[in-house]
Amino acid sequence: MENKANQMLRRAWVNMGLPFAVPMVDEKREGIIDVEALLILTILLMKQDRIVTDLPAWIIRFKDLINHQKLKTMVKASPEKYQKTIIENLNQDPFAATPDAFKRIFNLQKVLTNRITETIEMRTSKLNSLENVAQSSIMLKNRLLYGTGFRADLIAITHIKNLTMNGKQLAHLLCSNSSTISRILNDLRASQFLNRDNERATPTNPYPGMFLSTQTIWNMYEMLDAEELQSDELRKATYENLTFKHDKFGKQIAKGGG
Amino acid sequence: MPQELNREEIIENLRLLSEWLGVKYPAEAFELTVVGGAAMALAGFKDQTKDIDLLRPARLPVPLKDGITHVSRAKRLPPEWINTNAANVLRKVKPLKGLPDYFSEISQTIVISGNLRINVIGRQALISLKLWAATPSHAKHTTDIKNLQPARQEISEAVRFVLSIDNSELRKDDLRIVLREAGFDFDELIPPDGE
Image 1 (cartoon, rainbow over the protein chains, first blue to last red):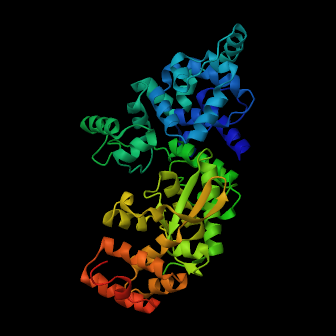
Image 2: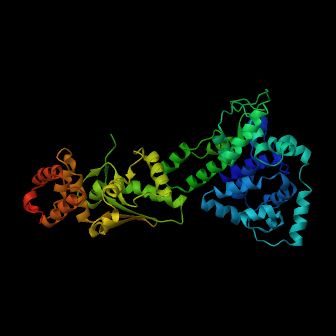
């Protein structure tokens, strides 16, 4: 399961500009990728391979497009055992090169060496351009347009066809608090960007849903736990209880697990 | 109607609960004190019961709540197959600190696994609670009391416990009928002057 997930994560990372030789996710066909959810899942499932140097390179290059508050909330909302895994996985030399804002979230203490800097710089040069990444990730494109915050993410997911979610559900999906989302929704309705049902006032080229979202993280924790369970009944009940409405990624993973 | 569980099924369901808790909360251990029908089934005084009533913890912590829900889904059990109804009712009628000392006694401990221990409440508390639950119209508790085969001293203490919660004439009338069924005479156990 973890290998399959890592293969699929690589596809999503191609959208974000990492040079993996796999086809990127077609967001218009497969759904939107949440940047912070992608980061958390990648760190959670990270093995000793190229991602260990590519990910710090990406974090350095795109640091202004990372919603650190969202990332922090996702980590805090994670079960303790997985918080430990995430921090253990980040406790590798290349992550010493990441910006302080990122390191503070995970309390990373590693010391940066010249060798690490050289390696990361080399990997940074392989990343795709910001212009290209903006075309393959609607969420990053919107952050370039509206700033790195929940407003940009909310506008991104209003591209989803038949979204029909209230403020509380949207806040949960974006790992934000309800008052922030409610305030942004009010602004977007006042400007007639959204109608009273929180739908786009003017027709847009819709996206089918979320390929990878906060829900993907929660589902992945459940599926990883299920792998540890000896009882078939407990495992089956876990899979039956998963919700894939905003998680096409998890749905594909679960096909082989339940 | 909820399915009845025998001793082996109770243990098996608790084993599943401990497995789930072990995966979800690997650093935590849990201890449950069981009363009522489940305590009787675990102690061998009864064949089956429909749920597991807890005295402690009086309020279920989140890990236990979630685990109970998960096992109920997996085994198609009622959502409250483990519940704190007995603890809740006792808390309302009598604060736990006010319970007799013998409510802290344990008749046996069943170690389900490293992270889950089940304490079966002591015999006197079991008899007292059964007598409290028993009314002439709710005969299953009377049957349970008979199965416990209480000694005169034990049933006297149980009567004192019930009357410490409710000493109304209505309750005394109920006790007279229930005790007669169980082979005791209320007025002989508790003389009219309350001595």
